Length: 342
Ligand SMILES: Cc1cc2nc3c(=O)[nH]c(=O)nc-3n(C[C@H](O)[C@H](O)[C@H](O)COP(=O)(O)OP(=O)(O)OC[C@H]3O[C@@H](n4cnc5c(N)ncnc54)[C@H](O)[C@@H]3O)c2cc1C
Image (cartoon, rainbow, N blue to C red):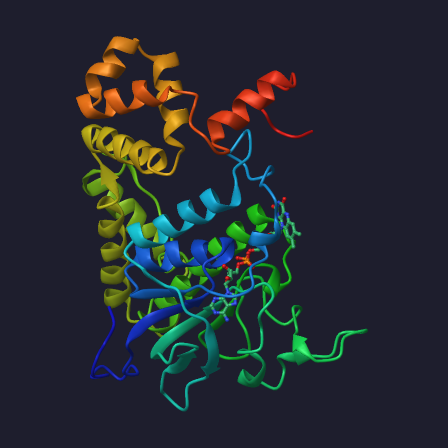
């Protein structure tokens, strides 16, 4: 989607979106902008709030919690699977666009990137933001230096600088991973929706971005298309020509039909999703779980001979070092059901 030459009146950019910070909030924002088709790069280095958490126990969907390295690995894998680039570098400067231009983003390792949108998602580091607008610095009581005013962004992370968004606790939301992820998602969705209103000429309703897939057959047929088109024509801005509005609303409805997937594709994605999760799990635990849940012969047949030999030679539970399997055994030994601290 990036325009190299700026031929359509939009600024020449290297990237559509630069996300500063690949923690919970930045990851979520990048997932939504990249899935929309925006060329997105995430820079991630420096002080992390998440890294200060010893073990994450309150992130829904992980019933016995998840360690921080695995959380980061899963987030960063997600960034790359949606087609965004993840770069281990620290953003040092964000320069807002001069008239009609692009943001200029500079990094510690000497990169310079021009971007149409910037999302700042760095709970602690705000130095690169302070010069972007006079309203950004705030002198908090008891602190020596001004910091970014966390009350400044609106609920979608918008700021006084067009195209510059702030996500997560840096935008004033509660300091919890689940909230940071939710807010990052909201900022990513809001950025896309703003783009659809301001650049693509859509309006409330058809312009509001949704990121969904549904099973094939839910949204089919001419009648469905017409109903959705009519529904989206309710709030057309006065200055838009009726025929053009109808055509745009119809295009949006047709795009929604592309979000349908067949049952075999749902099954394929299920397998892909499980494999992606398994790739981040401790191998000893995977083997133990597989042996518990499936016929051991089936498990052994599925393994390459050399892996079976290496496994039996070492002994399944005998691996040295604090593996997850060891942690689970410790939990059983001290009487807790799942090894989690209480
Ligand atoms: C001691 C402590 C314990 C916590 N325990 C929990 C808990 O148990 N459960 C819970 O839900 N929440 C916990 N939290 C809160 C949680 O860590 C944060 O709410 C959440 O991580 C915020 O996500 P974020 O993406 O906004 O910021 P961060 O987690 O800080 O992520 C920001 C990312 O940006 C990178 N970065 C920073 N500056 C730059 C830069 N200039 N350029 C490029 N990259 C940069 C960092 O390396 C980091 O990866 C805890 C926080 C602390 C401090």
